[in-house]
Image 1 (spheres, rainbow, N blue to C red):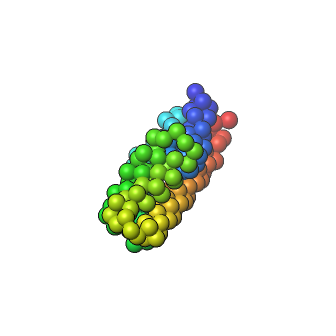
Image 2: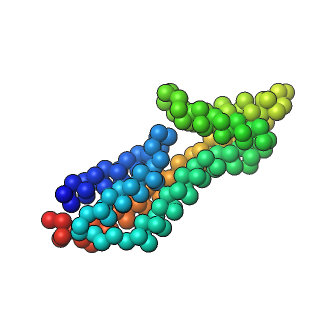
Image 3: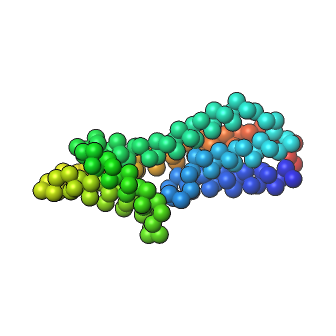
Length: 166
């Protein structure tokens, strides 16, 4: 049973890395579930402090994933309409069936929001949309870094107790 839990935990960790780039999966949270499953084995002792800290990090990154693109919009001169458009575009893009829907949604949402704010200044609207895109890329980079950190933690825990598994 421990080998099965180890395998499931490893799959969740890998899905966490993939989820860093796919909007359907919350990457760090999925990776955290891999750490949780690893601790459900009889070999590795349950460490609630470790799991609590890593869960806190995963939730924090999950929340930041929705805030950072809006911050990018604001940083590149966008108005509140652009920030709202980015957030709405992210949510619509998340549920859209098109490839890269979240990227396109954030970009188009910021652009539409800025056009609603000032229909004559398309240059500013485009600049705010670029800020949204850059914010989304920064968010994906942070998620990827945390997911890789969870992979390292998983492998370190496994390596420490490898003799008990096999």
